[in-house]
Image (cartoon, rainbow, N blue to C red; front, top):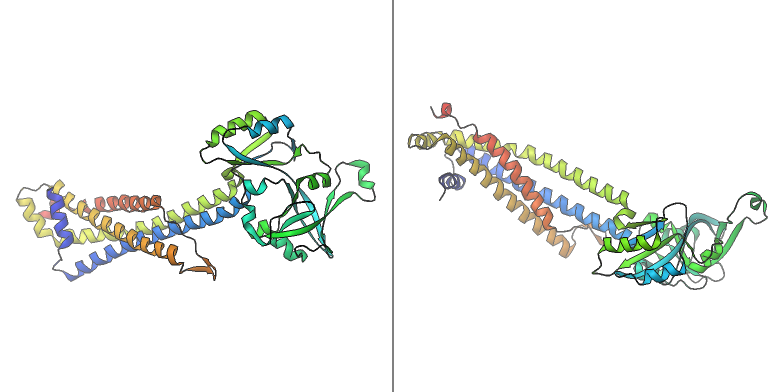
Length: 398
């Protein structure tokens, strides 16, 4: 057995004759356990919040979305549509036409977006799973509206006597603005109401694509977007290259992360900032390790003199206390992660911590976070142990 490791292990297990040293060692170990557990819990909490936040966008956003690189609309020819159906790796795609409109109902009004969609939209996205009441039915003059819009305008489902009125400016400029009715009008009967997230619930009204094309005076080939769902075995980059070859440079392709780049950037920045803050707390806490090892060096001064007289070198003596610091740090880190893991799993199983009476605080157990916490603890432990063990000098042993 390695000599420094053997001595260091005995020092960790044995109690000092000085009660103050024992108390300092216990407090040091406890601080490491609490610090490791706190860092792991916070990282698991942020991982859960990230997944929870992105689940909202996943309801609306397809795996790949094609949108015009310039302007609001682009044209999809019949030939291009046939080629899209034959792309290997694309399970389904859906056409859409989106524009900002003015909504009015019983003397209440709101500005939102109307999204004209085809029958494949619910297969490409998960929007039908977000229905709050009613049902997902986009046929004829039936539509689906967000909960925020329904609340503001006082909308009810299947209200044929008082439909939602959608007003959209007629395209064109100049003399058209002098017309008696410079807008097109569409009446919609709400078949359902979706609820996802406050901002999205106030933003969209879904209607049949041909109806919206007529409202906006666009032909059947003019679109504002195409949504793609990929097969499980598809390679996204290969699919994107095929889509680029068919749609050309006038269309911009974006995956989910690119569609929500601001949200992803914000979540990653918050996660990094929290990690750095708790790492700073750990750095301060691991100063206790330095103090504890120095106290142990002073307490075991006579033992060190004896070992030195028996032929142990200064380097080996330093290594004893260095390894002792690593053992304390490692055991504290593992115990902290174990206790935090029990806490995280209990939250996943029982949901004892609630955001609302029906919603448990989201957490996520990731092995990556285990390695991050252990790596952080061990790196800081190595630095602290190196600083403390360097106090062993010939002058100390004289």
